[in-house]
Length: 134
Image (cartoon, rainbow, N blue to C red; front, side, top):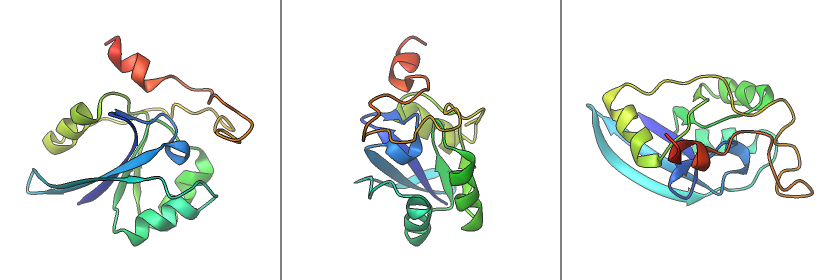
């Protein structure tokens, strides 16, 4: 299975569309076969789901995403797991072990709009800060 994780340095990014990078994993027979990090190709409605679909991604893991983005991923048959925080290595370990649990999206409706343009902060938890205090 090919999985994409929205990442910010060595942590799961709280908002998938505005993450600096995506980390791709290929998991086969409970083992990590491939790990690659690429830059975010750009945030435009529907573009990232299409881009990840073209890369063969079957599942996206993120801290949060809006309902519209979830709908785009559903159209491409890509499973979404949101509400995930923590270090990348810990999350990958949970994926391999089959223990990764999703939850409520960390983004409130509209919290990512214009993030990185006029808006400098997204209205969600800081996954770096939250995971360091655990």
